[in-house]
Length: 479
Image 1: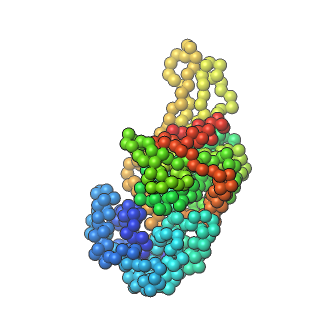
Image 2: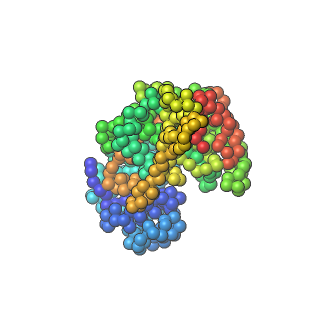
Image 3: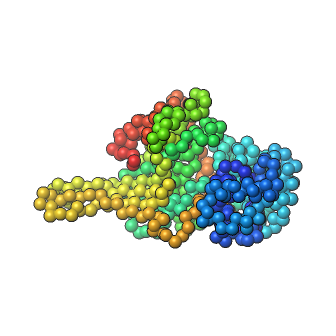
């Protein structure tokens, strides 16, 4: 059912995600008049605030996290905001919440960010409060479980009150401009798709590197680790976008049908196709940082780094390795996709002393959004001593290529799509379950073979075993 909601209910409205992303995104959308002037925004959390207290709280968050040139008249945005304290374990509180939300006949969108243990009581409370009708849709922020079984429990609880066409599972990477540009690059340019297969691509690398350590996430992260925190969602979504077959159209069903096919074609990994690590004390940007156990305050076997050699067993990708790596306390903050093409089958320049290098496509996602394609070109000269060739990059810096449009926070697009009801950039249940199925098999393999994280120095690119993971195939990580 297509409708644009005139109510938005934010759970976890005083949390870190709300302060850094949700409230700044909504304010920016309001300044740009992309949300209706009568959209009512209701925040709820355990913190005991009234409407004015929440508006003061939001003002402080906007002044801290939203650039001044995107704030516009904050008073206009703040006047949209209302607040209702809530204990999700007390069903009676949801009746007060429903009164605060008000009439929902024109549509209500809910953004639910909560601990996995609170999903079931929250859904039960929404039902009791009458906040799950046909004109209500719900967005679910991760983590959606810790494995396939718990993910199914959460999805079953949500499905008991909401049909699949009203469930919006959020992966904020899908809201990033360059991630969406990957689809445009593949399917709007005739030169790439004919080459996008095992005959012409040697391997693909996907890197999500962070310089930060635990920060304020120690409780969650030590129970999750890099595999479940990053690979299960963000990295597998990037892999699916690279590997998917061309959808018939750019709509939610067609795009997600093709993504889930790619995810289901992932081969189970062999123990020697994964590397895990945990950082020890070192230095980031010349500043000393503590090791993981020191930050945590106790010994732990949780991995802060993982590298995987993955395979997609289908016609397009058979034999092409997908190298995935993610880690904390890396030397740079970087998220990128590298598509390494094969060498030309025969170089006509070899007899003149020239060496060729295979073309490489690099799609930068963060911190810089850019696309770079390396091509071989002749070095200028008379060539009396032989021809010299060199790889020359063709760079597209997205902010420079599109100087007019405003660079947006990923959550701006996702919140707007949630309000308007477009599911294209959200994750369907069968995608989530295909991802967990593959991740659970890796974790089971680690347990069976007694895999423990190898140490690596903070500020490095991870354990040396990760280098061997690629080099034994004749490949190297892009650094």
